[in-house]
Length: 277
Ligand code: BGC
Image 1: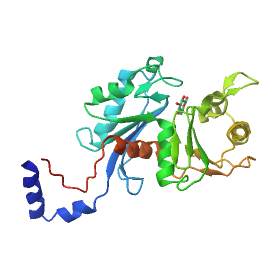
Image 2: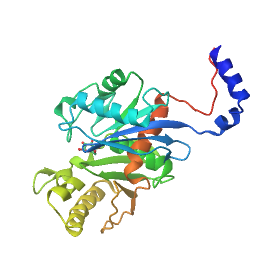
Image 3: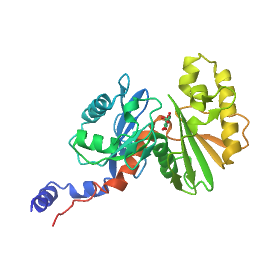
Image 4: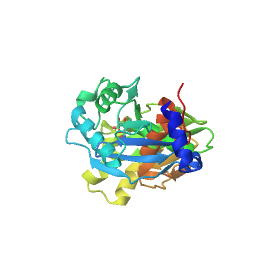
């Protein structure tokens, strides 16, 4: 009965009360086209309780290289061997654990058993989902979409444009609104209006704002949302009639959302001193 021994030992050093006041924790890893970010998250508060660790996404973003980079983040966080639940967010359509698209990563991820690949490579269970969807979950649970009624559309403006559709507190996964087509130029919206497009085309903020204006007006016309949330550290005003607010968790929404989702896969409260039969 090792758990009883643990409990007695903890009682002896007066730690049980401290542990009882600890909140649920999980690790979130947010894999992006440019960076792989990770942190330990307090899921009661929806806050990072560790440093935010970031490594560059390896050139070409091939599966084996991405796995190595994820391991590096976990090692730096010193959680590789921990039993914290782990959520991993990825910039692609994710269906039943498989990645079905690859806009800003290697094409090897198309129709790839990514969840199984990470679980085998990391030697542990994970919860795996699209990066913008988990950012939406973070904002719904802990941020700008908390208690929002009707349709909220969260977009992330980074290497690509990610989107999360949230309706009355429910996530409708894999919306991929970064790939709306621009009729005029036959290009993906993200190739025209993502943050990477601003950098690539060396746009002024005003010139980028014009492109975003087109994008949000188009999405507004198609979906008539009640609220837009803009993630990725960018706030934009514009002339949409739909209210637009900045994501409360900015660049951390992916980490926090991935961590929050992981509890679905491996419920666990670290406050409890568990006893096994
Ligand atoms: C991908 C999405 C992702 C977004 C943000 C897009 O290119 O298709 O799945 O959410 O980038 O990373």
